[in-house]
Image 1 (cartoon, rainbow, N blue to C red):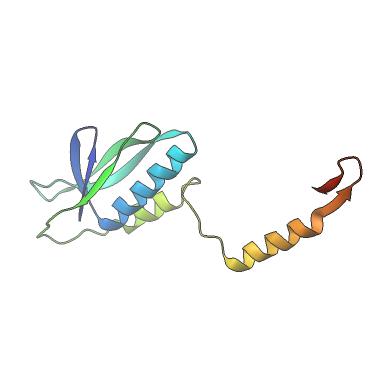
Image 2 (tube, one colour):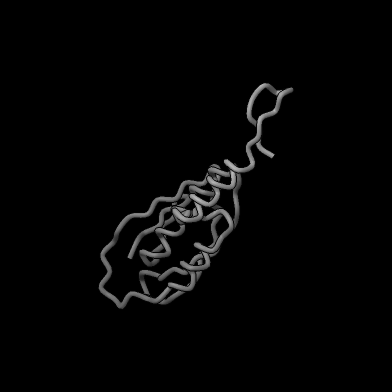
Length: 121
């Protein structure tokens, strides 16, 4: 379990949600944007599940820190997947895709006499 500190408040969520939230926050900020998101949380005093809404991105700091948890860890994997499916969430580029893109880029290059150099389409 992880504590998420945001705007002076702390909430508890699962490791996978916390990791996805921090990664997405950085990505949205890198795009120069801010967005509202909803994450599942556990209310520490009762162990009940709830949701928190927060704005992530530019100007919104999110801190994720480990915390002790004696109860059963809830399954928030659907919420983590939802955060990871966000359009700004970083994606790994498969090396085959990277090679194909590189080859496509090279084949699009041609000599431009007016430019006095290579150009791509």
